[in-house]
Amino acid sequence: GQVNGIIKLPSVTEIFISWWFYVPTTAPWSGEGTIQGQNWKTMWLAMNEDYWNNGSDTYVWRSGAVTGSDLSFKNNSGTIAYPNTESVNIPYFTKGRWQRLVWWIRDGSNNDGSSSLWALSNTEMQLVRSFTNANTVVSGVVRTDLSVNGHFIQHPTGTQPVAYYDDVYVATGPGARARVEIGNASTYAASNNFSIATVTSWGDTSITATIRQGSFVNLNDAYLYVIDANG
Image 1 (cartoon, rainbow, N blue to C red):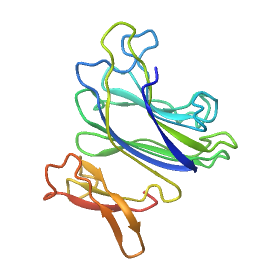
Image 2: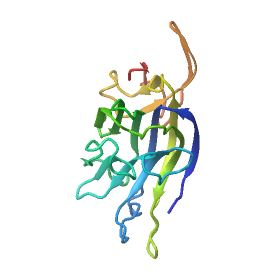
Image 3: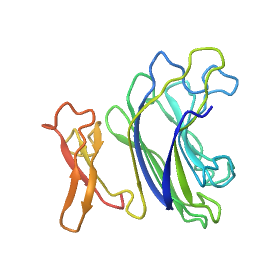
């Protein structure tokens, strides 16, 4: 089942996405208790809204696990960037907790593609999957569409899955990873709460941005971080 929203992209090869979401403890995961099994494409990139054409799509996939969740990069051909698409278990990726995921991808079809995925643990942002020098698309493919909550399997008769998304941030182009964030600790590595600012100008000597309070009760204990285009 498709219960999603489409964000149009300007035909780019580099994309940075940050998002928060929440699954209630009383709700099943996408696909939980169905014949298909647990299958949730949390973010899904494609060209010309063709999410099923081999070589033009890729997604961050959540599947079931004994503890927490398994996360991975996937695509419908199953060959792009393999074996970097194998799942990684994330024990803290559970229901009843606001989760943050950050995904960066620089597409390439000549063994020059890269991608990284970070997840927010109880204590920090953790790099859970990363690769370079791989094919992330087939030749001629340029991403034009991002499907938020790309594939969400409904239960045919039982309680329906629920996922709340918030603070979806998308940047594209050569400087996609460059951003301004606030965190709740004196180092970025020690922070476990974040909010990305809206940058309106970026120069060599100054940056103008609107701070988004997010889930911060106040900004008295917030720290400002500037991340460059290299991440």
